[in-house]
Length: 261
Image (tube, rainbow, N blue to C red):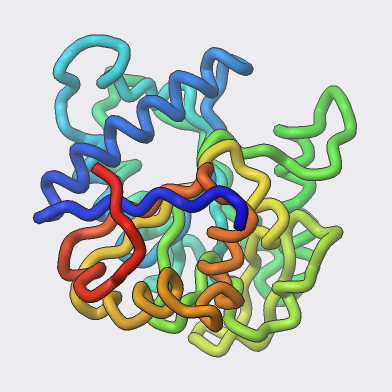
């Protein structure tokens, strides 16, 4: 048995947000120390609202609580093939919840949305997004996989994460950094997603899962053999103790896996 992921459970969203902020700032500062930037991938769903709650609070002072958005480079862990102002766009969600509310004086992150020129050709969109990653991660030296400082992910009620769905052939993709999906079991059907090796290669990987609606899938992921083959389970397996789950108590009710903190 390899190293285990870290499962943190909090009584309420405020406590979760506070702990998530501390964790994200630690990842940010480690990234800044490594290469002067903080390279982060973000998913959609309920995550951007929780992120906003965590990151938009005024700093308490000190480097361990200072969010330096001007040094952030934000990529999307997955995105739907829709215009950037469409209700299904992860970019729109992050923009409305977080990006539009970052105080101008703090400096703004560099954000990489999809190129909407390719809405009708999802494979080309995936290729172009991979090219964007290459310009950031492999500009000087060729690398087999990009190494994000942090990936911030959600967990679907079926155990999917990014746009990697249970039993889908994309889970076996081992070469591409960014893959196209044209048969998503959840609408919209056309999307792009980071591949599983890119996700599990991250320096740190964080899931945010809240609410009683998550408790059945959380139990499956953490307490059953079958759950280990779900996309979230595969990230746990591949990332080991580089993976941390930030949950509220209702999401882990009945989960037997030991919690930390």
